[in-house]
Structures are given as structure tokens and as C-alpha cells.
Length: 107
Image (cartoon, rainbow, N blue to C red):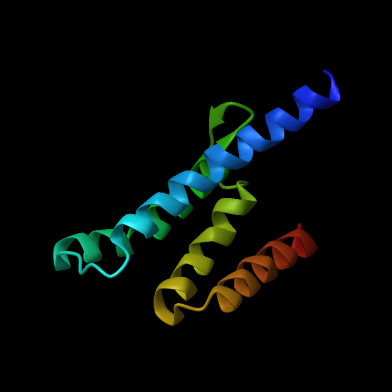
């Protein structure tokens, strides 16, 4: 690739990344959304996080893995409970890391 192609590719990637975030902010600035839409939008971060995490917790080497030796699934259970009870990202990560460390130490 030439330098010009690399530059155009980078600019293009920036535009397609930036515009979907910017346009809704511009169009909805100063407008009040319906309460149902606001409530629905509150669940988007949780849904995205679940979509990113669940495959890595349940699939190993292309196989569905619910075996007792699935370390990350075991760590996700108490971490999920802590996240639900405390709503603290720091506490959730700390508990997940501690469970992984303790299980690795024992095994």
C-alpha cells in the first residue's frame, strides 16, 4: 500500500467509527426521549458486555465448555454476584481476579 492509501484507509476508518457516535448526539441534542426508550437504552451497555464476555466464558477451542475445570466460568459466578450486589466495576474485577488466582494457586 502506498502512503496515500494508508492515510485514506485511516481517515475512512475514523469516519465510520466516529459518525455513528456523533450523529445521534447531534440529532437528539436538547430533545427529551420517551421514558421507554431511555429505559431501553440503559440496558445497552449490559447487553454489549454480555455479548463480549459470554463466548469467552462458555467456548474453549471451538467447543461449548461447561466442565468443572472451566476456570473462567467459576470466576465469573462470584464476580457476577458481586457486580449485581455492589454495582462496582472495581470490586467485580477484584473478585474475579482473586478467584482465578486462588484456584490457580490451589490447582
